[in-house]
Image 1 (spheres, rainbow, N blue to C red):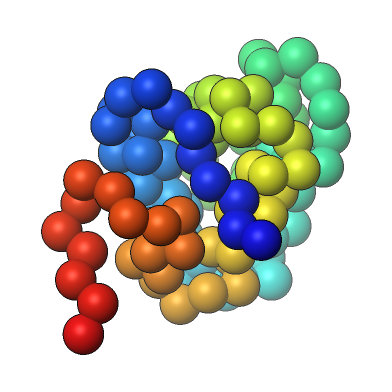
Image 2: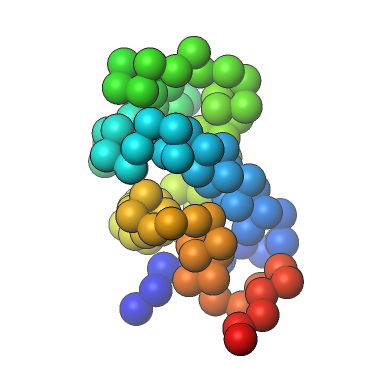
Length: 121
């Protein structure tokens, strides 16, 4: 059983992909384990949206040593929006899939057919 994004518009998928892409770069730089730790607050704590984002930022700074530039802050907001939209457990499954996989494309493919150029050869 795969978790799916149930957004009414294509924007939900694009935002999710955009946010994951930011963390793809960080994961490639510092490693899967450290990125997983850095994002842990976002999907293990059930708190208010802004608190989740702020805790994730603190976690990223502590575990990854990042300066938390604006694109990372925005990516966290997008991810938090998806967590609230699809539900905590489904989001955990999606984000864990990303953190354990090799690319954002793998995650988007796991979400099923969409409006993206996904060709299965």
